[in-house]
Amino acid sequence: MTNSTIQTTYLVTGVAGNLGNSVAARLLADGQRVRGLVLPGDPAVARVPAGVEIHTGDITKPASLESFFTTDDDSDLVVIHCAAMVTVSSAYSQVVHDVNIGGTANIVAACQAHEVKKLVYVSSTGAIPETPKGTLITEPETFSPDDVVGYYGKSKAEGTQLVLDAVRATGLDATIVFPTGICGPEDYAFGPVTGFIMDYCDGKMDTGVQGSFNAVDVRDLADAIVVATEHGRTGEGYILANECVTMEDLLTQLSDLTGLPPVTKIVPAGVAKLLGRGADLYNRIAKKPLRMTGFAVYNLTRNNAFDSSKARRELGFTTRPFSETMYDTITWLENEGKILNQEKVLQAA
Image (tube, one colour):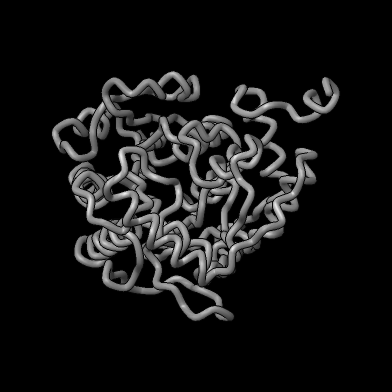
């Protein structure tokens, strides 16, 4: 087979998740051959785009990855490692460690054993140390769990350094992307932004926290990740961030989009931090933990100004208006029956 006819097979871990699903859909739209890894028995496999070749396996079990990495032709392999375990707790978690660190080590080892053409590792801005407010956060060259807050960020920092060490030690062609928060439609895991919208629309939110957040539409992330498979430089990282949105702006946008009354009561950041510590104590003993945690409050009150200029310059990364993402997410939630259509409610009244 000549170089001009060599095909590429894209291997996507976490393909049943929102990001992996979106990446697979983008690759299929480009006419690419896509293979996806899902956990055995995962019901979310039903939502994987048609056309993806499904393989069952567990990134914490190396033997289960063998068939995923094996092809019966000479196609090049490009791996996009999206699979991860998210936690909003600061406490050590064995399962998070096993997935985000051990699982990443297993993926790297499989990439080396099968001589893959490219690995794109999806890390997180949580792995990047915070800088003082008023400064832009850029991509560092090294990563340590001791420099970041929250166990998810610590695990991703360790996983990121593991990938970089493999690049430097073995010549693995790997690129790393650092998304901020992920938002947008078809978030069946009902992550932080989606959950926030649902709580607001269900009338469960009468108070906000003074602060900001940074989240990117999953469709824009998928576009950038696919571009990174071709144009991401070896051993380089790219922050994929949006503009910061203040809590006040978010609540105003939600009111404008839904017609619901705005939330005007905003708790000062200092008070919120105290409440977050109290929530952590409560959550340690409660059978039904609160959504609020000290780490969640930290994420809202920290410096969320991330610099994506490198990704915009080298990957052509762009982000749609956040209001468009909010509108699409609300519409999707209405269609899924997760929130009421506010126009219909007002008409019925």
